[in-house]
Image 1 (cartoon, rainbow, N blue to C red):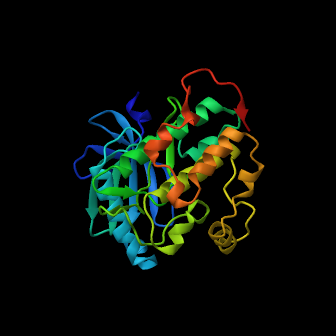
Image 2: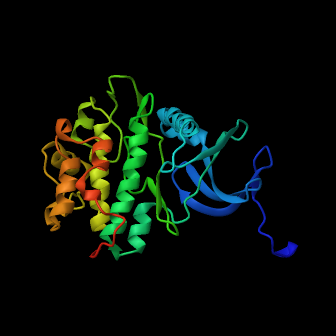
Image 3: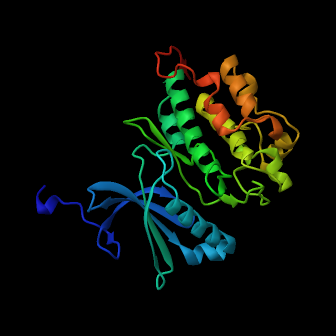
Length: 290
């Protein structure tokens, strides 16, 4: 590439290893995610940039949760969890930056929206990979509960089909009792016991079931509800999403039902990995999901 055609970095990290491009991969109220490059390894990465002052003004507790996400990412290493590379703080600018692995096709929600015709085999492969990541979190010492698992927090490399769990900012580290007590999450994916403030890692299994439902239908759970209050009433009363009631495939519906059942009846991630639902996913499977 000629020098005049080189894509210039907008910013370089303090070590000079990582360079940030102008392209925005993701955008939130206080966080931007940029395409970046690791010059040492020669790979593209994600440059996460968070304005701490704006974050603190909006919700002081969010700053602590962000630091928790960074600490968690640094401690985890798994094929199906987004990898973490580096973090640094610019105190003068009030900006926290951290470098993570990038998945070239974005979130699973975005990817599924772009691809209408997906085979049952592919769906099961995605679902199994999410479970492998969850199993790693739940068997971590101490146990880690994601608490906000949904298809916007799961990412995919479309050229390989590899799926990874990300966005651990709301995750909770729990002791040997495996019990947490804070109400957090995305309403459409929150297990009913999350609202009681006493729950275990089984809440992630409930959210996982809703993820599978969204992957199948390309529709948010409880899309029929007009408000968060309506979602809350449906969830706490045990009313399943309309999308699940419309699902005609008995195998898929049965699998999702097992995930979103009563807490004491929900299987663990390890048990679900042995479920007949995943038998033969390496074999040819006919049928597509619209």
